[in-house]
Amino acid sequence: MDQIKIKAEPRTEQGTGAVRRLRRTGMIPGSVMKMKKGGTELIKLPAHDFMMAMRGHASKQLLVTLDMNGTEVPALMREMQNDVLAGTPIHVDFSEVSLSEKVRVTVPLYLVGEAVGVKLGGGVLEQTLRSVDVECLPADIAEKFEVDVSKLNVDETLFVRDLQLGDKQTLVTRGEVPVAVVKAPDDVPAGGAAAAAATGEAAAPEVIKKGKEEDAAKDAKEAK
Image (cartoon, rainbow, N blue to C red; front, side, top):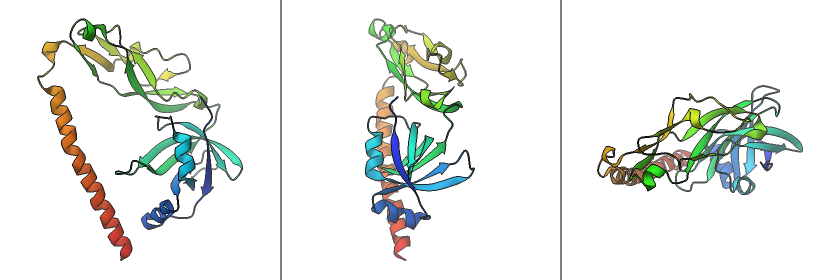
């Protein structure tokens, strides 16, 4: 994995209004949970530099090197909050790590290949698990696991215990948890996929509307 280096500075700005003004200056507020000293340090990151460093990285749990005024701190990016409307990062949390000690992370699963039960049997492939928890050294953190489902036939299920992740990753998720299944055509409710899509489309405006109302309330509170 290529090294991801991000510049960071200590910050004193706290509170909703203060961090919103900080974002307007092109900075992203964040925090680092300190392993060696203990406690949490508040930081700020140049938004443009941070987003450029994140280009091409899908996972939100990444090993990065924080450049803290010349001091390099290995850290795991634990959580990134995005703006509801723009989708841009508005807050990032890190945890300082030791490169020689294992950490527990959640890694997304991506299905690859065309299941034989779909191609030849007319079945429907259904992914039932989107991520797994693993333990590994920070340098061995995977951004995603690709799961080959090409040999999966109708009425067959792929379980966590069937995953081949290599000797650097230790699975924490229980082995009996199903990852994907090919269902026979008769087992799939008519219009199931279309109904799910319609539900998603109907829910989206509510999220946007709620985001606008919250922003309006924050602006009104700051104006007072």
